[in-house]
Amino acid sequence: MQKGEERDMYKSTTYTGEDRMCDLVCDRYSVLQVMSRFGIALGFGDKSIAEVCENYQVDTATFLAVVNLLLNEADGISLTTEVSVRALTDYLHNSHAYFLDFRLPAIRRKLIEAVDCSRSDVAFAILRFFDEYAAEVDRHMTYEEEVVFPYVEALLIGESSSEYSIETFRRNHDQIESRLRELKNIIIKYYPAGSTNELNGVLFDIFTCEQELASHSAVENDIFIPAVERLAATEAITTKPESLSNREKEIIVCVVKGMTNKQIADTLCISTHTVITHRRNIAAKLQIHSAAGLTIYAIVNKLVELSEIKELLNDSQG
Image 1 (cartoon, rainbow, N blue to C red):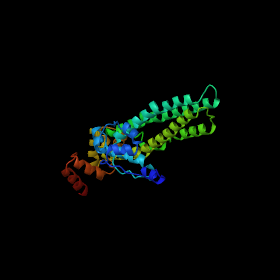
Image 2: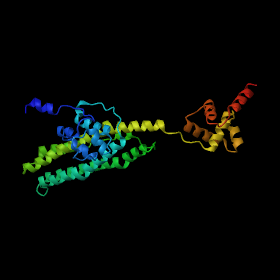
Image 3: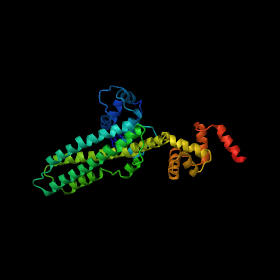
Image 4: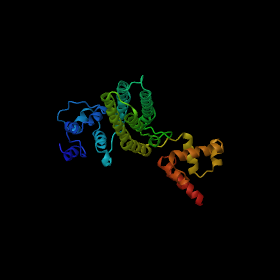
């Protein structure tokens, strides 16, 4: 194979739902991991990507967004397609299980076989470095499982939070693959290998895992975070205002009638301070801060009759 042909074999390609899933896998075998994290198994014959996704109840747009990002990341593809936040959360959850329960433990076992900790202080330090790194990855992903995902789940069922936002996650989202890169360089430069095949095998796995973690971070940064931001913005727009209490409705009527806070307090047998607190709560719930705005609200919601307003206006003019 000529070098030009080799480059062309891995040229950038944007896949669509009409492409066959088998062609996608044969062209870029790294997509097998994406499939497993979406719960898609082999044995799909000649079905298209859209058909396979439908069979496994996976959102096709989300699957394609992840695939096209990971296969064409260097080209900076603009991801404008609406994706399923729930499908992304499931994908990331399965990705966490892959790294914590399979990938990192497997690398550790191979590392123990490749370096002799009993005979070399450098080998012991390398293993300790790896364990500290694995613990860091665990903390990072546990935070997502215990804080970020519950926040997203609340958004999906229509509950917003004033105590947390996805922007907090964005600001604190570390690149967890960076220390793995450091471990790789330490092994290459400083470990006097006695068994080349075993150690090279571990290094190959570390190189691969580094790339996988970088892809994991790319999905979070370029797809998941923007999708959650859109969801949060939509939730903020569609959330219904908090309902008013009967007392607050009474105060609105009094305000519409032109009564002062003192007059309202005397009429309702409450303190002026309580009136002021109710009015502040009313403004926060309705986002209405003027008597004229409350008048319109009162008429629309039948708290007062239009004829009453006209009588009040006539009395004030008279």
